[in-house]
Length: 251
Image 1: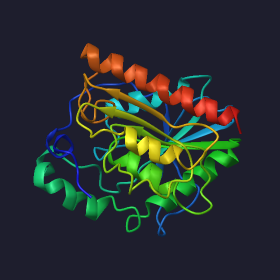
Image 2: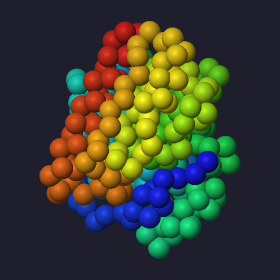
Image 3: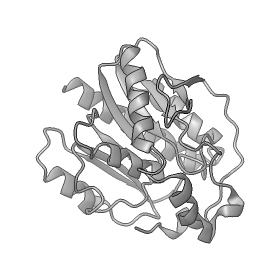
């Protein structure tokens, strides 16, 4: 697998956001250790979302994005686990250092990504959620579809904005419809969405391309003081919320 150049070479931004949620400890230890998660959204919602941030971790723009998704379309209980014990990647590690960093800190199997996701799902279930979807940003979108490709997975849908590593091959085992919100830097994602729809799910996947914004605009590479990024970001919030609500209502 390879990354688009923009993913390796676009650094994180300096941004500000007053977070609406709170950090909690997951109810299940991961490899014998406590792990935290960011929880946001109305606590009485029956609809649960798992969010997987990008490789910059809990960046203010990512937190703004998650807070807004959690409040969209009637609201969701959203849990965004902290997958990186030592924090996200730094700008100094970008470029040629991205893939080695991912292999060391963000591998789906080695770094217990799916175990963390399922622990977060169980906490949401205990808090009253009866349906679940999962999405991620950049690398996180791949983790989302990987989780939704496992046997017995609990999700109704998966996907996310500006995905990395998405292809017909990497999504061949996904067991739910997907939402793909591509930036100008990703390859054509229409064939990928069509390959998922060929599985015959009752609800079709969603694909939308934002040709005026760069890879990472909803996450650590985003600056929502720039009008076009904010506008595209708010539209992405609406697209995700609408899709998750639609699929939850149909189930």
